Image (tube, rainbow, N blue to C red; front, side):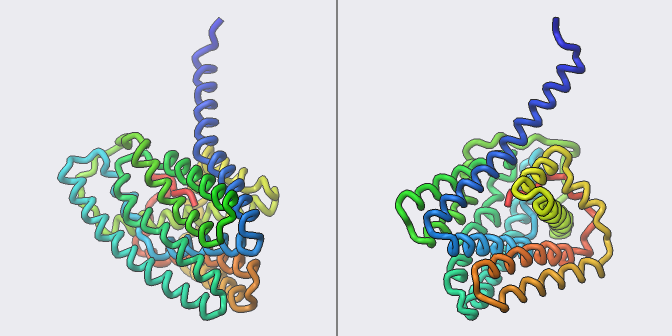
Length: 330
């Protein structure tokens, strides 16, 4: 006797959700944990912590300096060729400018860390920063593809294989930093090779791509990323090592970060205080000591401050819902 249609529908939906969680969240998380475990064994605890900090600093640079033109270009995946080509040229101009800003910011951070005597951390930041062009502007190449799952899996596989090689051959921490940079390029290549074409949803865009549209998307995305980081931090405090898993589950199943992003008050003074507080805390940890743990704490608060800064930078363009596209894995 066959199941009622409603039961079949619920079962099919549950299986689909489980598959999405496995591909988009659990497998990348498992790879991340395994890869960092291997890097820790290969280069030692202190350098592994410095690498974590360097990765967080580079993410902070991306959040402050980039404008999400590729994401709004993706909305035009079903547009006529002349419309899409014109939008692609506009996106390339915007993201090329963002890449220049990232290079300048990376240079300033390198000089700051090196001036503090944190020579290894400075060199790690410089190496890991080679991941930035994979997203800005080269990711424009995959704007017409369904990139989330393939990018995350490609990134995860690249990170795991690279970390395994570092451990197997006993390579220097510079090789581990290069693996962190190559992780993003692995995601890009996997998306180019395996991602299906993006399905058109809703309207067919005919309007030109403008900087204001990209800035509006960036402001909404910054709110969403900040919400997710706060959720993940709170969950980790409450659930320990299972906190990240719970946060990822909530992001995929209930779009919890998108929902909370809509509830974040649009009060500029609050964001100013939050950004100044987290930036000040980051500076405190950076200048109070030179231990790997304090560098990591500085980088963690810098990433929070970067999201707040991105919201403030594009505040006047704000108002877009954050859930139209899922944010990239970090």
